[in-house]
Image 1: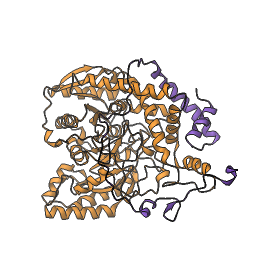
Image 2: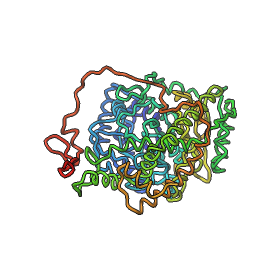
Image 3: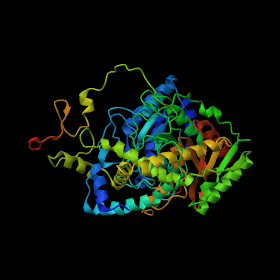
Image 4: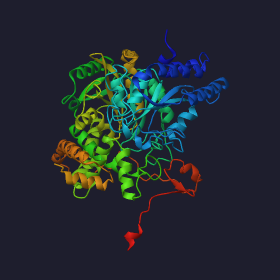
Length: 486
Length: 99
């Protein structure tokens, strides 16, 4: 028998609306699942069980009344711990914000709360979203439900592991250079980075403001579409949020990709990808061809500059964004001195972990006098060339496909060199630099570990990449496979 | 590529306290990262304009209407130190520095 925690969001939503199950039952099943397996996986930094049950009772009331129902009413979700939740600790997995309780909800939380969704808790991440393994959490390491010796990816590793292990039906994460798509790839779930500006970032703790986007995790494309539907749209409190109307995403899931032009960027295969990953994704592309898509080779010649550009721009923006952590207004504060400068420097020395410091240093260096033109200005110009690569491609093809990550899940502690870790995001970073949307979906296995298929779309083409993802899921069963280790 | 003095200077700009051991570690790690990033210098960017953000919008405006804000005690709830509904900070100017 299928356990309640194994249901998809759209299946559970129907059962809830038909009153065959209650949200309290569904929520309890997930809280039980968290109790059973999160001791091993460690996806959550905080489980808000009492609040969850209260929200579930309220959702059940709404379902009884049949009023203001949404596909997410009564659905238990997990939230990455850098999205502000009013009165509930929002730590960014950092000692700096270990005890920070925001005075307000992020716009995405207001929207989810309005649907009657249930929040199960907050999920672990690389500190301030800086990392690709969740090993940089200041609190503990999250483990991959497919193999507990391996990392779930990052930075949204807690969210991806929670969804993969059945501890949440879906989750929110954030993606600055791949932090949704890469952990989705490593954990065999769907992770979508919307177009820059599609989802409000009000209440998202800032890392790199020209790149950050909030997006959903789920176990299939339809569920991801339902979550995106709930959180997308303009917000007067985020001036980078786009006024474009939000389409009805699930209506576009018609299962057909006949005649769709799918581009395969040749540069995404040349360097660094593991043979098992390449083989799985080549098979996926063959499958897409069999489904009636037209496969075309395209060139994105500036791909190899993506990681270097990103590691100038993102740390530069981070060094400015993180200047606010001064121990005065909120957060960790070094108290053992009367000297203002010493207090400031020690607050930041003890409040931030090594990866955050490394990026503040890198960004400060790139912006400092004498280096600004050589590094930051140059990176901004190459960013234009990377964007133009995509613009040209989308004149000839409708979507692009590639591996989401160059490798399957790696062992915890295996990648110790910072730059090698940065290369984990080689296939995801260009989409952030250009601002386009992308999704990673289960695309097969290599040595028993999940491989993610990345589908990239033009600006605001979330409906199209979700259509491709959903159509692919209809002829494959990778997304229905459950992790063995939990 | 990056020496200890540069690390100390940048740390000072970022107001980041650092042990001597960390100075060594960052000098070597940042050097490796910058060596990898150096390929950017090869790119011909003549005539290319910079991209500061990925948004295709500019100057989204809203009417400037006064709105109620949060009560001071809500905004101060996370403050490490406070007095009389204000953030309390250490002295910025000491008497000695004024003489």
